[in-house]
Amino acid sequence: MPKLVLHGKYSAEAWQGLAAEGAIGREKVVSSLFASTGAELEAYYLMPGSNWDFMMIINNANAETMAAVKKAVGPTGSVVEQDASVIMTPAEFDAAGAGSYRAPGN
Image (cartoon, rainbow, N blue to C red; front, side, top):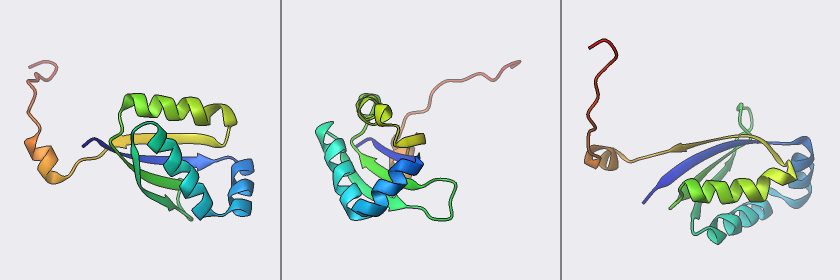
């Protein structure tokens, strides 16, 4: 199952909303957003003291999932920076096929 880790930074206005609404309420909203795309929010963490404000682990996510989320969240301005990376277990990594590659100059 494809899995992503998503890091992001909230705007000042989003932090005000999160403080008023509470982090648990935000987690429910984000979980519903991903569910509406066919993905699943596995984990949502706030990251005080980090360069990122939050981290999420999302199951069954792909490029279309992230495009739908970007279209929904982007216009609000509530997330001002984000980074998504595919993550794999060691078993998933070992099971992946190896491609053919030639380094430049070889």
